[in-house]
Length: 54
Image (cartoon, rainbow, N blue to C red; front, side, top):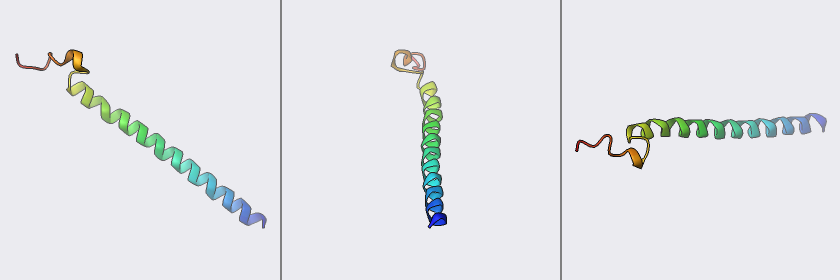
């Protein structure tokens, strides 16, 4: 019974760590992915005039 419970606890911890890692990777990816878009658009609506060829 002991190896089974330890195996179950290890797999549960591994699944939890993997979910946390995926969540962190997704968060970092979203933050890094949003940075170039904000820089390309002029970093906000208040600077939207800067890139317009008026």
